[in-house]
Length: 462
View 1 (cartoon, rainbow, N blue to C red):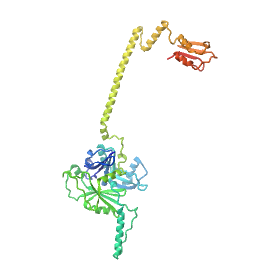
View 2: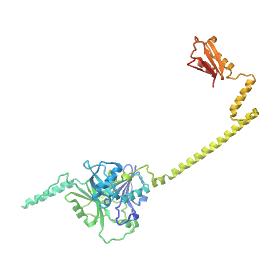
View 3: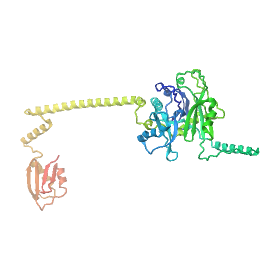
View 4: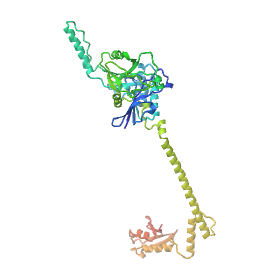
């Protein structure tokens, strides 16, 4: 099972929704063993197909909040979530897509990820139209490495060193800040993910030089929460320090970006930001962390539904569907042709039997069932010629005599013939053996006993 991981750019607020386009996207393709098959940068429609696709949503497009969620599920939960976050949003919460982290923080509070519904729908539909069925979207802030545990210890050690230096100098030691407990300290992980590039310029290939200072995409993670913003490249350190406060900070910068090889000037990507003191974070590490992330933003109406037949699925199934329709049409035509041929054969045989009946018995005026009429006419001829009919009294009596076996002949009390059957009454002292029925069958007769009268009814065997 292969996996495709794609890093999405942030939405450009200056571009209206009618002009949204995705530029070439960096991607990483892993096989079922986790080995890298391909890596590069490609347009959404030319990305390689995989069993599952993981999209890393830009930190600026995903607001993550912790809130108490009512104990609801399904559509009722979706209707209630906008009311939970409406006090913390500027835009109308009904125009946003709110995803719920299934893992709770303290049993009651959950992390909510809020994304512009139109932008998220545009992303999902773009990849669905490109043939990506199993799509998962995760916040890029959840893909950052875990905070370095030594950062907390280094902050505490630095405070102790400053206090010792003050005592050795004979001055009053500065009041030590209240040391927060390990529960209160939430380390901050920040990552510079590249320069801010206008979506319009990226799509059209316009490398216009902006007079403003270069800005970079900054993603921050505070435990399960995350945020993103665009800041000037020179102010990354100060911005991160101001946002972190007293919390320890680990700063990364994204390196080994796919598609960073030299290109022509018209399509060259911006250079990698150089931030002093930042640790390198490879795109492969970011992509593998995205696979491990369990917070899927594709929920509710954006949830993966394999049974849904979208345009991409119908496009792939077009040939099999046409073959199925053609097979059904051929089967229907073939069945009708076979029925027509058998119908003509039936009519021909019926005409032959009618002709044979009329030729044999010219006085026949009405033909309803030629085989039955022929059989009755032949029976009448046999009777007229003195031949016994199988259901005559003599024939039935002869078969009965041959079937008596151990039953004495003088044990018969009465024989009554009517309607081509013989009713046999045995004397009360005569006991009929169980094999009498089998002997009747061997002689071409059928026998049945009436439990009320004790009479046997003998007929011609079928």
